[in-house]
Length: 304
Ligand SMILES: O=c1ccn([C@@H]2O[C@H](COP(=O)(O)O)[C@@H](O)[C@H]2O)c(=O)[nH]1
Image 1 (tube, helix red, strand yellow):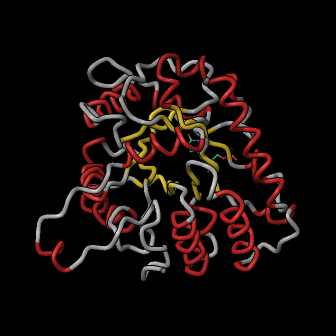
Image 2 (tube, rainbow, N blue to C red):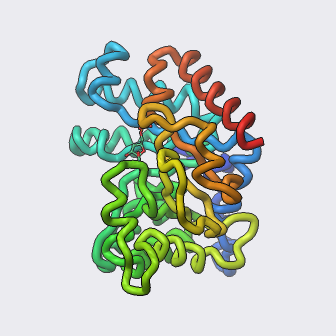
Image 3 (tube, rainbow, N blue to C red):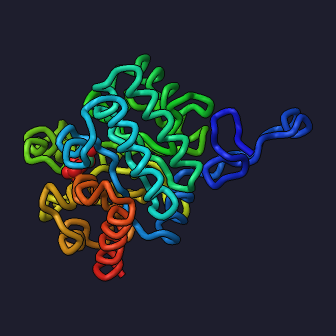
């Protein structure tokens, strides 16, 4: 039976509703995102597939560049992959470009993907002064919000402390955040490799903050870092006790074979991410599934 959000009751993404008696007594904390992600990666393999409905992909799938095309594309990806990959990562920008009707497609995709058992990481890269960050947290990280996601990408470049409302909301909800540290694009280095006040690189100070947030968490903290698979070498201490989202496989040129060199000992916590490299095989659901399975197989060979 579906809950008001459309997510079937008691699905992996939707814990049982509380009874009146339970509501009167203190509620147990929700299972933390880090634990849920570890289990999903162990069960399904550590692959995140991005849902990035580029205009060029809509065209190559034979779809119009409009809301109907967006909806068809998104539904096809969710139906093909949500029951088998650990994480689906809708890229908010591609939905926002269609205005409120595009955001409605995103809402539906998040609910449907969670209902089918995938964890949903919404890639919106939010970051602002703390008071505004609280509103972003309410939008993406508070249960009951239409865009509630298992995790959200956030930018620490207004200062790591400005993320506090998102960190607190995520913890309370059993959700996660992925903080941009060393992004996959070459332009990121001029900011992220710059030397911060204490003498360490800016990205390292971000990673150190993440490590403090995750201290003592088992089996994995819920505050992740974004570290590009394209970097060749991270040249940073990645022992943050949290997941390391590694975008850049496929269209940006990185391969599974690059991951041990970038991540070293931290490779066990890597969540490799690929969007166009899988989506380009659509619109056939079977071809999408096969592409995701090939990536998962390659990761299993390389990461063990
Ligand atoms: O450092 C980063 C952070 C996020 N991304 C996002 O991942 C996907 C990559 O798409 P591909 O088609 O696999 O290149 C996209 O949504 C980016 O915004 C990233 O690439 N790098």
